[in-house]
Length: 457
Image 1 (cartoon, rainbow, N blue to C red):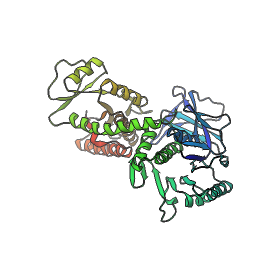
Image 2: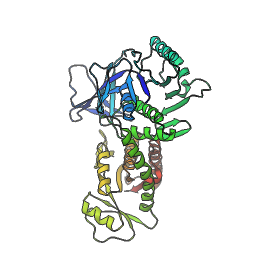
Image 3: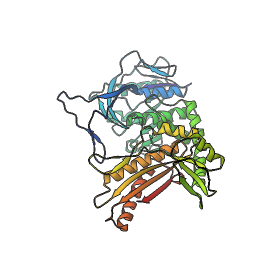
Image 4: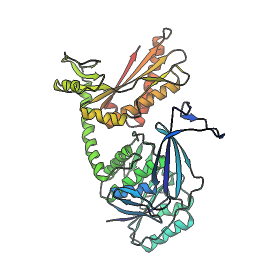
């Protein structure tokens, strides 16, 4: 069994979920805002969660892959599947959360990473993204490598990687980075490039997206991907399979922890089969000369030309009745509309708890779902904010559906006033479709297993 020495800092992340009922949030085109006044004002939160991150992520994932690992100069351990620590973390980070977004408050002074020569020879030294490099640390690693010629080095180097760490890149057998320009010239080393939504390793490419909205930081997401690829690589999996394991792990990891190797294998097998089934299901649902019917009450007479029925609820009797007649049951899952602040424009509700609901719908026999957004067309609307917000929600919904092996149907209703012309409608619909497709492609929605509907009202 490989013995892995992880070099990095252990963080304690403290999440405070702010209470939207008692804090006044505002929104612009890109993000949510909260006006913090340092005058004794209060900003209530209703939930507090603490987790270990930084080098702890690498330790947890290595353990899940049955690899022997420990963190240099740190007592953090994995016991019975849980991280346990008897001392203080190297540093704290605080995260103020609203829905699926957060503001991170890190320490302005990061302690240098400690080096402790391991009692047993390390087969691999894994320099984690969380490592704060110093000349002393770099020299200690180099001296250890010189004294143990069979030990191999892995380096996680982001775009802020310090110049003093360059010698480690020259000696590394495997490099994880989000900045290809950091790589030594004409390098023949094994390299994994981690960028937003795209992973590349040994000529293999994999898309990814953290659709579970777990509020993990970018650094934690990077560590989950890098360590999963590394651990899978050590266990003899192919580069393509290692990347797919990383995709599955990052898309399912929550604040409660990452997935075990057995769970990853199970989801891998399910995803391979589910990808095929989604395409077959979509082909049946959108077949020529077939139609989809939306209903608000139980059906008695079933048309032979029906391919699917969108139910208003998930009544098990209705679902069973449809399946017995060879008709695909679906459901509308948005929770209605809400207005933007000081605006008549709207966006759909219900995205927050969607992943768990979709899994339940699948277990009940539902195989597709519809989500509806409404845009108002006038001389001044829809605004860029309304288009981008609605398209972002629709794309995230579609990706979540496909992750749960449901075919998503995305409906955009454009409500125009009496003064708007057909040309204005067509121009607006084209803008909205371009934005929607761009968002879908960016997060990896399979457009061949998705339905998009535009309606004019």
